[in-house]
Image (cartoon, rainbow, N blue to C red; front, top):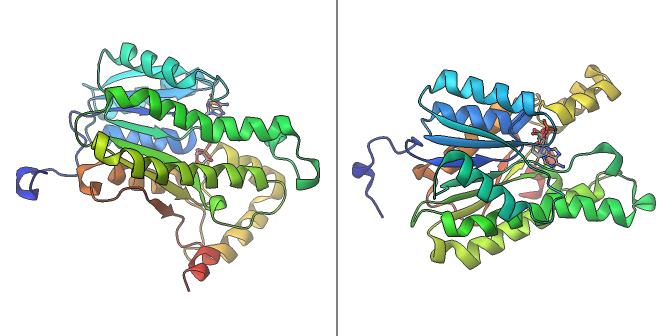
Length: 277
Ligand SMILES: NC(=O)c1ccc[n+]([C@@H]2O[C@H](COP(=O)([O-])OP(=O)(O)OC[C@H]3O[C@@H](n4cnc5c(N)ncnc54)[C@H](OP(=O)(O)O)[C@@H]3O)[C@@H](O)[C@H]2O)c1
Protein backbone atom coordinates (compact mmCIF):
# COMPACT_ATOMS: atom_id res chain seq x y z
CA UNK A 1 0.00 0.00 0.00
CA UNK A 2 1.55 3.34 -1.06
CA UNK A 3 2.09 6.01 1.57
CA UNK A 4 0.25 9.33 1.32
CA UNK A 5 3.57 11.08 0.70
CA UNK A 6 4.10 8.87 -2.37
CA UNK A 7 0.85 10.07 -3.96
CA UNK A 8 1.16 13.85 -4.42
CA UNK A 9 -2.26 14.09 -6.05
CA UNK A 10 -4.21 11.33 -4.34
CA UNK A 11 -7.67 12.28 -5.58
CA UNK A 12 -6.57 12.50 -9.20
CA UNK A 13 -7.71 9.83 -11.67
CA UNK A 14 -4.71 10.45 -13.91
CA UNK A 15 -3.86 7.43 -16.09
CA UNK A 16 -7.06 5.56 -15.14
CA UNK A 17 -9.45 3.90 -17.56
CA UNK A 18 -13.17 3.86 -16.81
CA UNK A 19 -16.49 2.54 -18.05
CA UNK A 20 -19.66 4.42 -17.04
CA UNK A 21 -22.96 2.82 -18.05
CA UNK A 22 -25.84 5.15 -18.83
CA UNK A 23 -23.51 8.08 -19.52
CA UNK A 24 -25.69 9.73 -22.17
CA UNK A 25 -27.65 11.89 -19.68
CA UNK A 26 -28.47 12.53 -16.04
CA UNK A 27 -26.23 11.21 -13.28
CA UNK A 28 -24.07 9.08 -15.60
CA UNK A 29 -23.28 12.12 -17.76
CA UNK A 30 -22.26 14.12 -14.67
CA UNK A 31 -20.01 11.24 -13.54
CA UNK A 32 -18.33 11.14 -16.97
CA UNK A 33 -17.66 14.91 -16.77
CA UNK A 34 -16.31 14.64 -13.23
CA UNK A 35 -13.95 11.85 -14.31
CA UNK A 36 -12.72 14.10 -17.15
CA UNK A 37 -12.13 16.93 -14.63
CA UNK A 38 -10.12 14.54 -12.49
CA UNK A 39 -7.80 13.80 -15.39
CA UNK A 40 -8.87 10.30 -16.39
CA UNK A 41 -6.97 8.89 -19.41
CA UNK A 42 -9.71 6.92 -21.19
CA UNK A 43 -13.47 6.77 -20.81
CA UNK A 44 -16.23 4.61 -22.27
CA UNK A 45 -19.86 5.59 -21.75
CA UNK A 46 -22.91 3.60 -22.73
CA UNK A 47 -26.37 4.57 -23.91
CA UNK A 48 -29.54 2.63 -24.69
CA UNK A 49 -30.91 4.66 -27.64
CA UNK A 50 -29.60 8.20 -27.16
CA UNK A 51 -26.33 8.08 -29.14
CA UNK A 52 -26.43 11.88 -29.67
CA UNK A 53 -26.58 12.41 -25.90
CA UNK A 54 -23.57 10.13 -25.38
CA UNK A 55 -21.60 11.87 -28.16
CA UNK A 56 -22.39 15.28 -26.71
CA UNK A 57 -21.30 14.20 -23.19
CA UNK A 58 -18.01 12.88 -24.60
CA UNK A 59 -17.49 16.10 -26.58
CA UNK A 60 -17.86 18.06 -23.31
CA UNK A 61 -15.41 15.66 -21.62
CA UNK A 62 -12.92 16.28 -24.44
CA UNK A 63 -13.27 20.05 -24.07
CA UNK A 64 -12.32 19.63 -20.39
CA UNK A 65 -9.50 17.17 -21.11
CA UNK A 66 -8.36 17.33 -24.75
CA UNK A 67 -6.04 14.29 -24.59
CA UNK A 68 -8.80 11.98 -23.31
CA UNK A 69 -9.49 8.76 -25.22
CA UNK A 70 -13.27 8.19 -25.50
CA UNK A 71 -15.82 5.80 -26.91
CA UNK A 72 -19.64 5.73 -26.82
CA UNK A 73 -21.13 2.24 -26.82
CA UNK A 74 -24.69 1.03 -27.22
CA UNK A 75 -25.63 -1.42 -24.48
CA UNK A 76 -28.92 -2.97 -23.43
CA UNK A 77 -29.31 -3.95 -19.78
CA UNK A 78 -31.74 -6.65 -20.90
CA UNK A 79 -29.15 -8.35 -23.11
CA UNK A 80 -28.35 -11.64 -21.30
CA UNK A 81 -24.75 -11.41 -22.58
CA UNK A 82 -24.28 -7.74 -21.60
CA UNK A 83 -21.16 -8.35 -19.45
CA UNK A 84 -18.89 -10.18 -21.92
CA UNK A 85 -20.23 -8.16 -24.84
CA UNK A 86 -19.80 -4.71 -23.22
CA UNK A 87 -16.40 -5.42 -21.69
CA UNK A 88 -15.00 -6.67 -24.98
CA UNK A 89 -16.41 -3.59 -26.82
CA UNK A 90 -14.89 -1.31 -24.14
CA UNK A 91 -11.44 -2.91 -24.43
CA UNK A 92 -11.57 -2.71 -28.20
CA UNK A 93 -13.02 0.83 -28.32
CA UNK A 94 -10.42 2.24 -25.94
CA UNK A 95 -7.54 0.10 -27.26
CA UNK A 96 -6.69 -1.21 -23.80
CA UNK A 97 -6.34 -4.48 -21.86
CA UNK A 98 -7.18 -2.86 -18.52
CA UNK A 99 -10.24 -1.22 -16.97
CA UNK A 100 -9.62 0.48 -13.61
CA UNK A 101 -13.06 1.83 -12.78
CA UNK A 102 -16.55 0.58 -13.57
CA UNK A 103 -19.64 2.58 -12.66
CA UNK A 104 -22.85 0.61 -13.06
CA UNK A 105 -25.14 3.62 -13.33
CA UNK A 106 -27.66 2.64 -16.02
CA UNK A 107 -30.87 1.13 -14.69
CA UNK A 108 -34.19 -0.07 -16.03
CA UNK A 109 -36.33 2.98 -15.17
CA UNK A 110 -39.10 2.41 -17.71
CA UNK A 111 -42.25 3.84 -16.13
CA UNK A 112 -44.45 1.15 -17.70
CA UNK A 113 -42.58 -1.50 -15.67
CA UNK A 114 -43.26 0.31 -12.37
CA UNK A 115 -46.50 -1.41 -11.38
CA UNK A 116 -48.56 -1.30 -8.17
CA UNK A 117 -48.16 -4.34 -5.89
CA UNK A 118 -51.49 -5.91 -6.83
CA UNK A 119 -50.71 -5.73 -10.55
CA UNK A 120 -47.04 -6.69 -10.72
CA UNK A 121 -46.41 -9.03 -13.64
CA UNK A 122 -43.65 -11.60 -13.74
CA UNK A 123 -42.38 -10.01 -16.95
CA UNK A 124 -41.95 -6.56 -15.32
CA UNK A 125 -40.40 -8.17 -12.22
CA UNK A 126 -37.90 -10.08 -14.38
CA UNK A 127 -36.93 -7.00 -16.39
CA UNK A 128 -36.31 -4.82 -13.31
CA UNK A 129 -34.27 -7.53 -11.61
CA UNK A 130 -32.37 -8.47 -14.76
CA UNK A 131 -31.50 -4.88 -15.67
CA UNK A 132 -30.77 -3.59 -12.18
CA UNK A 133 -29.12 -6.64 -10.58
CA UNK A 134 -28.06 -9.27 -13.13
CA UNK A 135 -26.63 -6.77 -15.65
CA UNK A 136 -24.27 -5.02 -13.17
CA UNK A 137 -23.18 -8.46 -11.88
CA UNK A 138 -22.54 -9.67 -15.42
CA UNK A 139 -20.50 -6.52 -16.23
CA UNK A 140 -18.40 -6.84 -13.07
CA UNK A 141 -17.83 -10.55 -13.63
CA UNK A 142 -16.64 -9.99 -17.20
CA UNK A 143 -14.36 -7.12 -16.08
CA UNK A 144 -12.53 -9.04 -13.34
CA UNK A 145 -9.86 -10.36 -15.70
CA UNK A 146 -9.01 -6.81 -16.78
CA UNK A 147 -8.79 -5.03 -13.42
CA UNK A 148 -5.42 -3.65 -12.35
CA UNK A 149 -3.47 -5.67 -9.77
CA UNK A 150 -4.46 -3.13 -7.13
CA UNK A 151 -6.82 -0.17 -6.96
CA UNK A 152 -9.75 -1.32 -9.12
CA UNK A 153 -13.03 0.42 -8.37
CA UNK A 154 -16.45 -1.18 -8.86
CA UNK A 155 -19.22 1.32 -8.07
CA UNK A 156 -22.90 0.46 -8.32
CA UNK A 157 -25.44 3.28 -8.38
CA UNK A 158 -28.19 2.37 -5.95
CA UNK A 159 -31.02 4.41 -4.42
CA UNK A 160 -32.53 5.51 -1.14
CA UNK A 161 -35.38 3.21 -2.25
CA UNK A 162 -33.14 0.26 -1.33
CA UNK A 163 -33.51 1.20 2.35
CA UNK A 164 -37.07 2.53 2.54
CA UNK A 165 -40.49 0.96 2.80
CA UNK A 166 -41.60 1.99 -0.68
CA UNK A 167 -45.08 2.84 -1.84
CA UNK A 168 -46.70 1.85 -5.11
CA UNK A 169 -45.55 1.63 -7.81
CA UNK A 170 -41.82 1.43 -6.99
CA UNK A 171 -41.81 -1.63 -4.74
CA UNK A 172 -39.94 -3.88 -7.18
CA UNK A 173 -37.57 -1.07 -8.25
CA UNK A 174 -36.69 -0.63 -4.54
CA UNK A 175 -36.24 -4.38 -4.18
CA UNK A 176 -33.92 -4.44 -7.19
CA UNK A 177 -31.73 -1.72 -5.62
CA UNK A 178 -31.75 -3.55 -2.25
CA UNK A 179 -30.58 -6.67 -4.12
CA UNK A 180 -27.87 -4.59 -5.82
CA UNK A 181 -26.64 -3.37 -2.40
CA UNK A 182 -26.61 -6.96 -1.15
CA UNK A 183 -24.63 -8.15 -4.18
CA UNK A 184 -22.18 -5.25 -3.71
CA UNK A 185 -21.52 -6.23 -0.08
CA UNK A 186 -21.11 -9.88 -1.07
CA UNK A 187 -18.70 -9.11 -3.90
CA UNK A 188 -16.64 -6.97 -1.54
CA UNK A 189 -16.43 -9.91 0.83
CA UNK A 190 -15.78 -12.50 -1.90
CA UNK A 191 -13.44 -10.60 -4.16
CA UNK A 192 -11.75 -7.61 -2.49
CA UNK A 193 -8.63 -9.48 -1.38
CA UNK A 194 -8.39 -11.57 -4.55
CA UNK A 195 -8.77 -8.56 -6.87
CA UNK A 196 -7.26 -5.71 -4.82
CA UNK A 197 -10.37 -3.72 -5.76
CA UNK A 198 -13.14 -1.99 -3.83
CA UNK A 199 -16.84 -2.71 -4.32
CA UNK A 200 -19.31 -0.06 -3.16
CA UNK A 201 -22.79 1.20 -3.90
CA UNK A 202 -24.06 4.78 -3.76
CA UNK A 203 -27.51 5.43 -2.26
CA UNK A 204 -28.82 8.24 -4.43
CA UNK A 205 -31.76 10.42 -3.33
CA UNK A 206 -34.08 12.43 -5.59
CA UNK A 207 -31.86 13.95 -8.28
CA UNK A 208 -32.69 16.20 -11.23
CA UNK A 209 -32.48 13.98 -14.32
CA UNK A 210 -34.53 12.41 -17.10
CA UNK A 211 -36.41 10.21 -14.66
CA UNK A 212 -37.27 13.00 -12.18
CA UNK A 213 -38.26 15.55 -14.83
CA UNK A 214 -40.97 13.07 -15.88
CA UNK A 215 -42.17 13.09 -12.24
CA UNK A 216 -42.02 16.92 -12.12
CA UNK A 217 -44.06 17.09 -15.33
CA UNK A 218 -46.65 14.75 -13.83
CA UNK A 219 -46.82 16.34 -10.35
CA UNK A 220 -45.93 19.96 -11.07
CA UNK A 221 -42.78 21.71 -9.78
CA UNK A 222 -44.48 23.06 -6.63
CA UNK A 223 -45.72 19.65 -5.50
CA UNK A 224 -42.29 18.14 -6.13
CA UNK A 225 -40.62 20.98 -4.18
CA UNK A 226 -43.02 20.41 -1.26
CA UNK A 227 -42.11 16.70 -1.22
CA UNK A 228 -38.41 17.58 -1.30
CA UNK A 229 -38.83 20.20 1.48
CA UNK A 230 -40.40 17.60 3.73
CA UNK A 231 -37.97 14.82 2.96
CA UNK A 232 -34.44 16.26 2.94
CA UNK A 233 -32.60 18.46 5.43
CA UNK A 234 -31.11 20.40 2.50
CA UNK A 235 -34.64 21.16 1.18
CA UNK A 236 -33.58 20.76 -2.42
CA UNK A 237 -33.45 18.11 -5.10
CA UNK A 238 -29.89 17.01 -5.90
CA UNK A 239 -28.14 18.08 -9.05
CA UNK A 240 -26.41 15.20 -10.89
CA UNK A 241 -23.08 16.87 -9.99
CA UNK A 242 -23.81 16.29 -6.27
CA UNK A 243 -23.74 12.56 -6.96
CA UNK A 244 -20.81 12.77 -9.39
CA UNK A 245 -18.62 14.35 -6.68
CA UNK A 246 -19.23 11.38 -4.39
CA UNK A 247 -18.55 8.89 -7.19
CA UNK A 248 -15.38 10.78 -8.19
CA UNK A 249 -14.14 10.44 -4.63
CA UNK A 250 -15.02 6.72 -4.42
CA UNK A 251 -13.16 6.13 -7.69
CA UNK A 252 -10.01 7.80 -6.38
CA UNK A 253 -7.10 6.51 -4.29
CA UNK A 254 -8.47 8.55 -1.37
CA UNK A 255 -11.34 6.07 -1.00
CA UNK A 256 -9.14 2.96 -0.86
CA UNK A 257 -10.30 2.08 2.68
CA UNK A 258 -14.02 2.09 1.81
CA UNK A 259 -15.10 -1.40 0.76
CA UNK A 260 -18.34 -3.37 0.65
CA UNK A 261 -20.30 -0.26 1.68
CA UNK A 262 -23.51 1.53 0.77
CA UNK A 263 -22.55 5.23 0.68
CA UNK A 264 -25.55 7.54 1.10
CA UNK A 265 -25.67 10.53 -1.30
CA UNK A 266 -29.02 12.08 -0.48
CA UNK A 267 -28.50 15.50 1.17
CA UNK A 268 -29.73 14.12 4.50
CA UNK A 269 -32.91 12.15 3.81
CA UNK A 270 -35.01 12.59 6.96
CA UNK A 271 -36.58 9.12 7.03
CA UNK A 272 -33.16 7.47 6.76
CA UNK A 273 -31.66 9.81 9.36
CA UNK A 274 -34.43 8.76 11.75
CA UNK A 275 -33.49 5.11 11.25
CA UNK A 276 -30.02 5.89 12.57
CA UNK A 277 -31.55 6.51 16.02
N1 LIG B 1 -32.63 10.55 -10.59
C1 LIG B 1 -32.97 10.13 -9.39
O1 LIG B 1 -33.75 10.78 -8.67
C2 LIG B 1 -32.41 8.83 -8.86
C3 LIG B 1 -32.69 8.49 -7.52
C4 LIG B 1 -32.15 7.31 -7.01
C5 LIG B 1 -31.36 6.51 -7.82
N2 LIG B 1 -31.13 6.85 -9.12
C6 LIG B 1 -30.30 5.95 -9.93
O2 LIG B 1 -29.34 6.70 -10.64
C7 LIG B 1 -29.02 6.04 -11.87
C8 LIG B 1 -29.13 7.01 -13.03
O3 LIG B 1 -30.44 7.53 -13.06
P1 LIG B 1 -30.81 8.90 -13.82
O4 LIG B 1 -31.92 9.50 -13.04
O5 LIG B 1 -29.59 9.69 -14.10
O6 LIG B 1 -31.44 8.32 -15.17
P2 LIG B 1 -31.61 8.96 -16.62
O7 LIG B 1 -31.29 10.41 -16.63
O8 LIG B 1 -32.96 8.52 -17.08
O9 LIG B 1 -30.49 8.18 -17.46
C9 LIG B 1 -30.53 6.80 -17.55
C10 LIG B 1 -29.33 6.29 -18.33
O10 LIG B 1 -29.42 4.85 -18.43
C11 LIG B 1 -29.57 4.46 -19.80
N3 LIG B 1 -30.56 3.38 -19.87
C12 LIG B 1 -31.87 3.45 -19.56
N4 LIG B 1 -32.47 2.24 -19.78
C13 LIG B 1 -31.51 1.41 -20.24
C14 LIG B 1 -31.50 0.06 -20.66
N5 LIG B 1 -32.61 -0.70 -20.63
N6 LIG B 1 -30.33 -0.48 -21.09
C15 LIG B 1 -29.20 0.26 -21.10
N7 LIG B 1 -29.13 1.55 -20.70
C16 LIG B 1 -30.28 2.12 -20.28
C17 LIG B 1 -30.06 5.71 -20.53
O11 LIG B 1 -29.70 5.65 -21.91
P3 LIG B 1 -30.50 6.56 -23.01
O12 LIG B 1 -30.11 7.99 -22.73
O13 LIG B 1 -30.02 6.05 -24.34
O14 LIG B 1 -31.96 6.31 -22.79
C18 LIG B 1 -29.31 6.80 -19.76
O15 LIG B 1 -27.97 6.88 -20.20
C19 LIG B 1 -29.96 4.83 -11.94
O16 LIG B 1 -29.28 3.69 -11.48
C20 LIG B 1 -31.09 5.21 -10.99
O17 LIG B 1 -31.74 4.06 -10.46
C21 LIG B 1 -31.64 7.99 -9.65
